[in-house]
Length: 415
Image 1 (cartoon, one colour):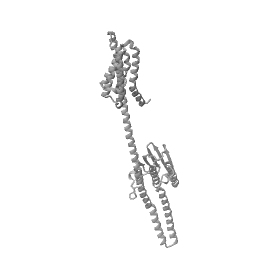
Image 2 (cartoon, one colour):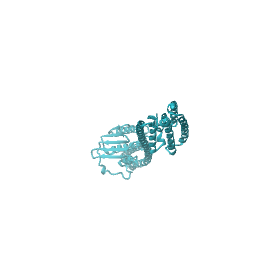
Image 3 (cartoon, one colour):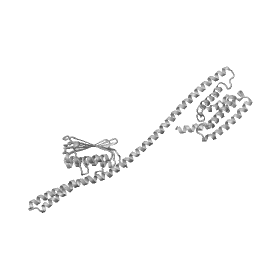
């Protein structure tokens, strides 16, 4: 049974219980009237019963708009007690009606009046249990006071325990309310954090576009443009060659430069957009990228995934793929490695990418940045990670290989 159902049943008893107890008291009193009441006392009791019913009708209407103890509820309790006391004086069996003073007293009285009301009700109950009021002799008086002490102690103890329980219940309700407020604030913070993540990823995507433009410009300047310049220079020599062997030599050089420039152009186009992510998740895309790089460079390379793979946000996947591609490009150009390993680790709220090789290594403190070309390489990889609230570390030593580790937040794909 729920707390709401219990509350509703108590309200029902507080409204109709006095009628039932009064009716039962009247039946028992009528059955014993010949023995315990005179004719005059019967008429007085009948009148008081009518007054008690009228009092209950009035309170049933007045209490509909009152939930807490007030002056009217105190007057109602006092008048009901006076009626019960008088009726029990006329016939001890009206104590059944007087018992209504025990139930719902905390809704009618407050402060010290609650304790006074309970004690006054215990007086009626003790008088009824001792044979009726007033006691006729010393023995009945002693019995009355003994029963009064027992009734009062028991009732006051129960009320004390009830008060403590209500205080505990109120404290629990206050704690629950505070927890709900805290949960609401936490949910708001989580929503704000999600919004900041989304904004961060949008900014990263915009910055990534600009970086790709600068990278492509640097790629064209360093490779294709220089290759085309060399081809033009060789063709100019061919045009002015004094003999056929000299012309053929320079034509062969121009053809080699053209093939090299074509290869660089294809590589630049391949790295221009994360095509590998169009149909595969990040683990599959990295596996294919590492395999293609190993086949192209004839370097033994392995890819490993640890943890439970997650469907990452496309910007996170693109960032880690770009870092991997840049790390592989650096390894093929500078490391002269015989073996390379790429590990993608899903670690709770983070994703960690590790690229390690056994190449010739370098001193990270003495490595110059690529001024004039947008700072690509290690600086560019670090900037990519930091753009999505991540970080990157590089460990290397001349002759002992290089280890690149990128750590970024695990942001799941928005479905």
